[in-house]
Length: 353
Ligand code: DAH
Image (cartoon, rainbow, N blue to C red):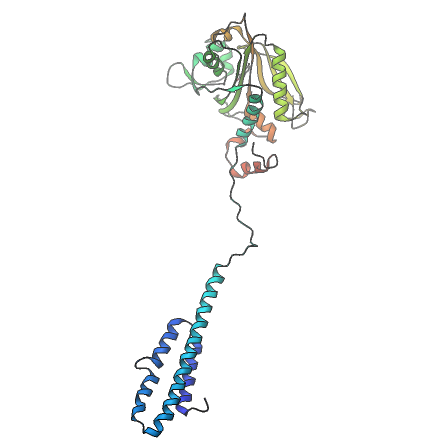
């Protein structure tokens, strides 16, 4: 500002200094009022021009006008700069980093017991079985008598039961009562091919028993059903569920509701059949009970043993799940520990069975 009077030079320096430190719009605004407003420093000086002698007034007027114009321009420029800075800061704050890893959503998954049950169901449904369900609080007749387990029969000791306050009612000790209910619903129609999964209750509690557990019951009735049908169906089912490499064997056994009765064993998963603690050194683990349906049971369901025959089986889902997932403690399945359960996300390459 060499061409200006010294007053103008000081004014400009003062103005510029303040402008440079103005960081936001209100600061610019107040600077504008301070100099160019109605009572602004420069406005007042211009009003005072009238008092100057005519020959000075022209030059002084030009100088003040020039100063005013420079101030207006400088204020506008700084204002635009602040606008741009503000917007850039805003955009910066919102910037999306496309290279950041995403937050994976937590995927829910089916409980191992549900998976094991569905594997069994899938195989048998493909063979033509259909699903049936019965009540968990069951009458003693359906749970025992109808299955040829009369009151006082020693077989009732095999299943330590939970009795409820209602007379003659129990928490069902097995899914076998659904056999009777399903036969009654079929009203003599053939074939009967029923699959009854469900929760059952017994007074047991240790590393291999829980007071509540799950079974799948199967029942087939038709003309000319024999032990070969039983063996074929169960061997195929177990191979499909546990894999082709598993070996099976049948041992004769006893159940009041079947005659003859057999139990099915599979090779021990822990030792591959060599013999270890899990299989009590036998190389085999029992997986289900089965047999040809007893004539008395057929009669209780409304079928005549001189005309039709059938086989039945009952298997514990927990044991099968332990084998399927390589578990050594049954109780893991009921603790609902998420760290334990989430290991099964990747089971079967992520396929949710
Ligand atoms: N109900 C028997 C149990 O809970 C299992 C069973 C054995 C079911 C033989 C059957 C069968 O249908 O035929 O131990």
